[in-house]
Image (cartoon, rainbow, N blue to C red):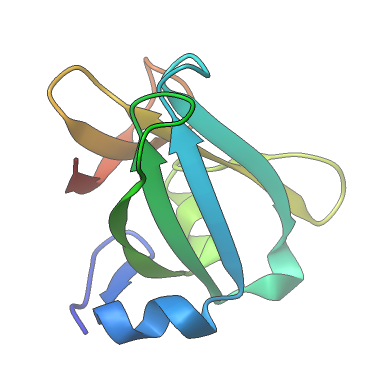
Length: 113
């Protein structure tokens, strides 16, 4: 387990099987993947993988424990309806996967594919 900054903690690969959520991003979806979760789910364990296109194999980015209130305070997630936040993951052309609300906002590097 690696302690992270800004409300993100990278977990061991064995944690993927017990993750609360399993999400897969796809470059064909504007190179981003997003979804809404409840703040009450914090800490949220999320397994994230990424694929370069439909029908392509997915690569595990990692499994992360997310402190949703801390991420919100740091501007890394966006407030939605009452008690919810939007997580957005972006695959940039540098190969890195970022947690970021929009391209001109603060970001956190989660990994590389």
